[in-house]
Length: 207
Image (cartoon, rainbow, N blue to C red; front, side):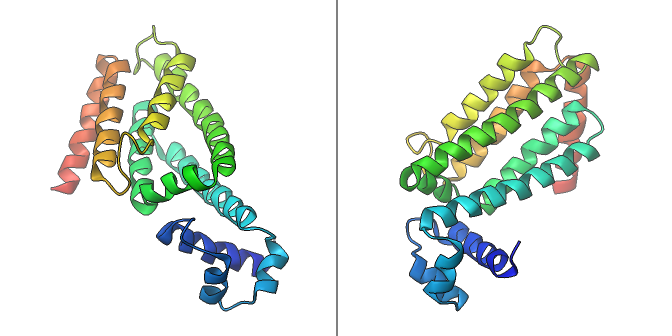
């Protein structure tokens, strides 16, 4: 990829994540980057095109981090628990306000994001649940596909402004509680023992 385009994407992503999408204009970006409008529009003809490239570029980087976490995990419970912690870290890095801003002011891009995000998260969850059942960590009677869809539906619902206000710590706290309750509900005694061990290790690290 062109280095100039790469630099634009890197700086624009940082600017959007800090100030949101609606509050940042193409003029603002040109001033911040020290480039002309002609240069910016040479690579991105519209603000929507730039926003979309930034969003999907961020998703690719997150997907790489997720893959690394999955490789390091020793079992499905460890993988789910570790990915849950990574999701919370992401919310701290990217303000919930930015998410709500994308939903409201760039609805078409939001739809593409949700569809793409749903597909890869769904496949990842189904694999996790099936592996957990096979290894005795999750209850054999759960339907991996339906449980994955239920989890993702809950996640989508929690990102609605009517439920949690942007910048609210309640959102992070609620996701933490939801993930623990969800995992406890599908675990066998072996899986629950593993979860408690992981939670104890985290508590010890924090203290």
